[in-house]
Image 1 (tube, helix red, strand yellow):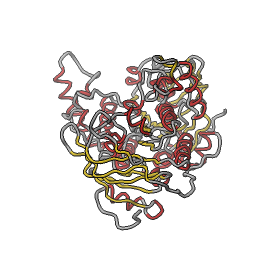
Image 2: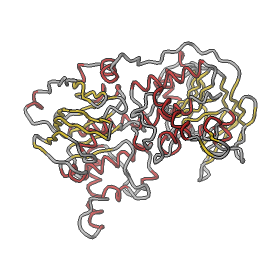
Image 3: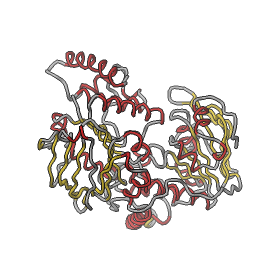
Image 4: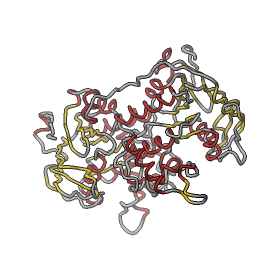
Length: 525
């Protein structure tokens, strides 16, 4: 499909673009990831690239960064043809990349991570001293404050991302590629990231932003390119488009950007939680006397800044963590600290769980898709071939059906989980859990890293499960997702429930105050 290239600003047009890709194509076996892609990125701008999961965005940027070699096409940096056979060549060309899943050594300090791979000479001490001075300067220039002596594993996700940006700037990057940079950030961390990116742009850096979040595209980019099924379908000035127009270009049809659902019709009580408490491995209390009830035919959303107990609540209910208190499911008490506190017992009781961390708790990345679709349910009668063995043919057929129903791309059951995009990994996990028809669905960050078309689809599946009389406990850092999906909202702060609210009688300001530990005054549910 022909690309519609926007007219750049006059001052940018006088200079060669920072990046120009001409006729880039890349295939992985029978899958054509990129097909004859051409795009120009003006220097000193923030350029967005959007598209559905599997549209080829990350592949294209991985070619630019030297992770993949294109089968055909040409790369120009600053108007000059540039060969980029590997990431070191990209770094020498002034390109840095911040991946969706960070490339940091957890038990190294910030300083050691920044220097790693960029050491000068045989002795490490001079390199560390130089890096310390440079980090101080970069932190002051770009609001990238991070303790250089802190261990990466002790940092929040937002601060780890700053380390990745510092690594790129330390290597003299003039072009920064960020792949789904806000997928794991809280709203406050995302706002801080945007201030950093605007500061980088003001200093003349060129930024390529890969994201599926149209609000972010509209807020921060100068131009946006849209990809669909491996092709570049349009490049437009951001100020001349709208979220609705971009969504239609991405998906090839009109997309509903809000959740369309009828009022809930809650029935019997499914989940009762009393005085729930959890301590972490250091003895710190993470849940501090949580009390909640959840009824059939209802979505209860948990709002809160990450780290305030939502993850521990899901993990305890899902049998991953242990705690104290009482939890009853359909009137039967669940084991919170004994041998019955495990995922298998929870699934047998009628609980399905979509974990927040898909790569560590939701999948085994080296295993095939059809194996991942069976995890947790491998003992189901339909998957058994006799007494001892699984029916692998039945599992593959089941996976093919789920891939078709949930539009997982590429639809290859034998492909390893690590070779799917983050959004397609998420669709596999959601399909596995929702289609077991549970009494209670625990779902954490259901659309993290998922494109606009898949978000619409996943939301419809959650609402359909509610309308079928099931109970859903939803945790999300996306406040608009909580407000549009939930029938009731519980706000968590510091391991406690600050209050319950009716989405129709509250707003983001009130919820934001409660998320910060201030008691709300209206809209109680």
